[in-house]
Length: 121
Image (tube, rainbow, N blue to C red; front, side, top):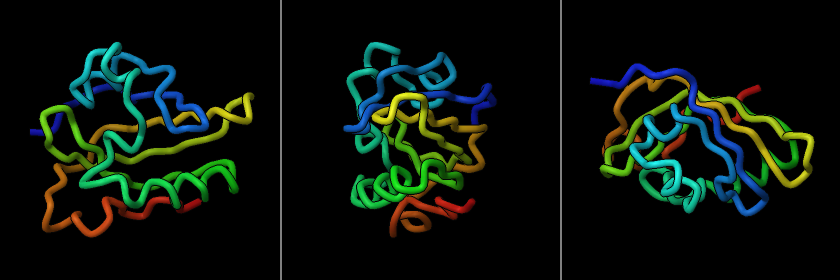
């Protein structure tokens, strides 16, 4: 069963490292705040981080992004979430909001890239 939680909000730096996370982000991903602040977007991408760099480069160029993204929880389980992102006042930081999970991700269905309609404006 998918968890029901408030929106998970995270802030990342230019290296895609988490620099601020709320309690909902910790609950969504299954990490403590201290653990999550040692991670990057790449670390929690499902099934791998291969697609993160080009997606993040596009986000930096466009300044915002929304769509569906697959995340890997600490347990190793994948979960699909709707998200939106925007640059913050600092040019080197971005804020991402992950809304309620929409479904469990699994390797056969989402293993090709981890992305749904990411990047739709």
